[in-house]
Length: 377
Image: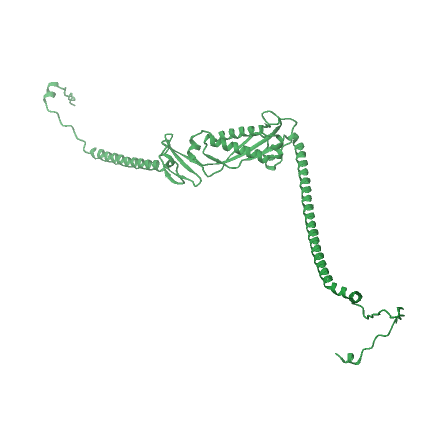
């Protein structure tokens, strides 16, 4: 067995002068690397396409997200970095479809201009549970007012009453309403509270609770409208509802006074009605009596005038023969008196001056009808 040949020791000089031997090529491995590169390239190209599609979709979705709708009862204002876009009335967007840059670049503020907004003041009212509010029955008094719980107001005559008010309004200037004040609802409530205290201090308890509720409400309405004009709040007030009540522990006394005044008014009205009716009846009777008197007077005048005319016409006959005139007048009078008498006899004065003897035949037989009367149909 021969000894193994030792490996050739490298000679630096020879190796540096000799040409380098070509590196052996691995022919079977080359096709594997080309397929992997192509797959990687295809994967990268597909990924880039997907990324581009996603970016385009993201941009489109980002832009489409700026589309918004303003409802029929609303208007809208677009704020770009906190400032309204546009000038004058063009800053207010009417109902319909609109577009703005998505948040946080643009911000859409919707303003319900056709809705009725409500503000309630209970600074002067006692606490009421939802059940009591629904039933309409006030809570019972408990002898005294509880500070910080029972609300009340002081009247001009030094009494205590309860007052609450409900204010409703609609927006007429959206820009002023939104951008002039931060919390305009709180501002209105403070105005309403101050107005209730102001009007109560200038009214009597009797007027506010019983006699002049309408006047009390009108003062509240007038002062609130003045405040809205002075501060330019951009809204219109509807009629304010104001409710007043006496303290619960003395409510019955106020009710008794109210009932007594109502009865007094009723009796006064009844008495005035009776007086008017009596006056109308008296006037009617006086008119009838006056008309009857006028008619009687006219009739008497006409009768008197006719009699005077008749006597004037008869006067010449009377002057010619007074006796004959008297007899004719007597006969005419008797004829009128005995119009319904069946038989009439006239007995003249006997020549010797002695009265005639008259015989009255009673139960005489009725006169038989004649043949002519019988045969007549």
